[in-house]
Length: 198
Image 1: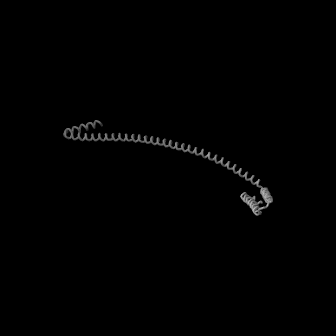
Image 2: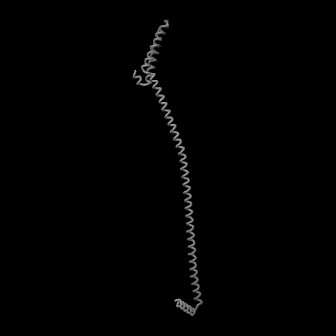
Image 3: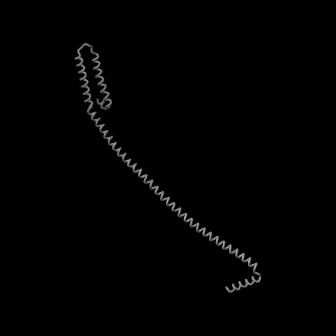
């Protein structure tokens, strides 16, 4: 009978089913083999005796196989399994809540980082615009200075050109109007002034 306990509950159920089927079929065969016309009482007693023997054998087998212990152990195993499953379910729900909170914080963190990058971009944009305006003002200032220098240089060039043209025109006019005597008088006056200036 130890082999029944070692094989497990599936083997036990098959064994008990076979025993019950054997008893049922043997009583059926005994009843079918009786001839008609006899009293039913002896047949009833044989059947009752068969049933009693079957019940006794089954009770003996159940006690020998410790079915009560088996079902008690099986009940404990199922209750332990259910308890473990409940604990795992609670742990899974706890883990789910933790991840749910982490996801919520992740969304908040993503929004915060995105806002920070947008703010940083706005600050950089403002800085670039300020630097560009400063550079443009510096370029305008340099351009104004360059224009003023060009205007001054152009005025000086025009003044030199006007002076040269005036000297040339005066020289031509003097050559026409001043004769040899006037020229000699001018050279003498000039020499006198140079000697006096020394």
